[in-house]
Length: 295
Image 1 (cartoon, helix red, strand yellow):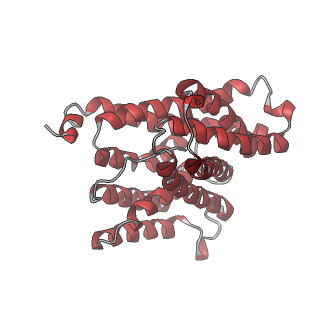
Image 2 (image 1 turned 90 degrees about the vertical axis):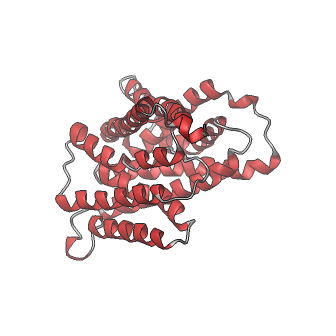
Image 3 (image 1 turned 90 degrees about the horizontal axis):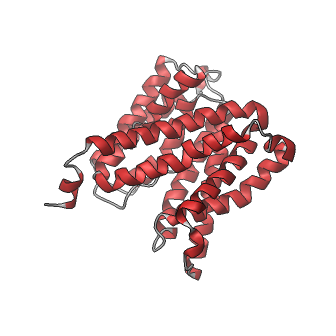
């Protein structure tokens, strides 16, 4: 019996865990957005990265690793892209709805998947992404329909996500899951001081804020990473990727539930185009290395 057959024998539990992980990540983003009026996106980014790093270091104990000199460059790029991705994503959330921010950010890893292939079918998925962006972005007479700066931040986060995937594969060679803790530490060393300078010590460490910030770190990092790791061991990579493609819709749904961010029909159509492109790209892809996700 092949490994994929074994993985797909009892799919309901890992599928449920993966859906729960996506819900956790988007719930964490919704919770983070409630802190923006208090300490701003830079403060939330810095605090989340600090608390998430502490959690990840306790779990993975990266100090036990024997680092190679050749891996230091990829690790630095990995950590920098991780922190910048979170920073830009939260800046986007200050200006645009959660579902739209997730959809725009999702174009980064989707581009990595599609442009690594030159098959004719991939041009269909590229066309769907372009159609989704045309529906979504404020162009022409719809210039006031969406905050252009927020959209640019989300697309920038998508670029960083693509870079994160590329360098994560190189940095993680030989280090496994502990790479996430190292990358989070690097990003915290850079973006926590930025958040602290823009927010101030008193506001950043307000006792009323810390429990919520800890909840953001757990919901966005520790809890979903654990669930995704379990799901990855029990699901075929193609199934995993197809389910992950639903994340923009999950973000839009939770944005409605927790933040009352209702989307227009055109925006829902844009999300549908991007989700279909992602599902199609995953379903027709040649088997590759496992998918990575941090958001």
